[in-house]
Image (tube, rainbow, N blue to C red):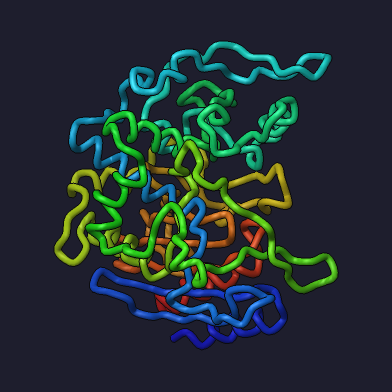
Length: 384
């Protein structure tokens, strides 16, 4: 069923459009297909395989979001309460309101408090420099990087009042900090105890230990004249803020277990990590009539524009984008899906009981050729 996908991956590796790729498809019972090709780095011989550790980047967001919803179930967090009691920085939120004649940013007070629901659905007003040219311009006025792993760098202006728009941004990092404030524990410890451990995701973590460093794939960029080069991208070592929005590393096989849990309504192999009610909530669109789940890139070296379904009113829920209509590849309405900056992708289709993960390690995000590979993987999974 996967002849076209495997042939396309082989061509992409041979022509150095990608260094390597790992893919799986799953159902509720287990893996239904697995394939790997290429190398972990163009300047090394180690093969890309099922044991390869990749930077999951924003695939972390779904994991952190489920961890936050677990805390809601346990009464430590509220979806719609004012978070400023847990997060002091939220007591004086400002909205970026343009720039003066001298180029200095101008601000106004936010009209309402931020809630966890807004953080998880990207309706809080927080952005990224690569999703907002205004935020990038604001960052240029600072004497430090806009995001450097510190808590202070996360104290950024909003781009709109909470609840008044949709913009992909750092809200899940703040959700991770809310988890820490509610539990009194570091995010990594909470996620291991409540999700990664119970799901058997034993090779997924917020850092790569030295004993596993040899299995990590390098991140690549395309050269103007063709071919690939290793891209010297690293997350800040030992950051003050654990990256709930993008800090996880792991194997595709591990992440497939997370996808299977989503397909199972919160259950994997008899272990329940979220309630049926929360699982149903995760399938609900939280962004109303607004289109959500797309990116208009403000930094082309980091991301292409990402609009997988330009003719569909995609929405965003508590953990991911939600597609409300069938797709040509086979997704049913209500499919959950998202991705990571280094061209990693996942989807979970509860109605069909089908999901999958595709990982390369290539930037910028939303590479057209990798997206084409994702489409072929999906078609093979659905038999379309």
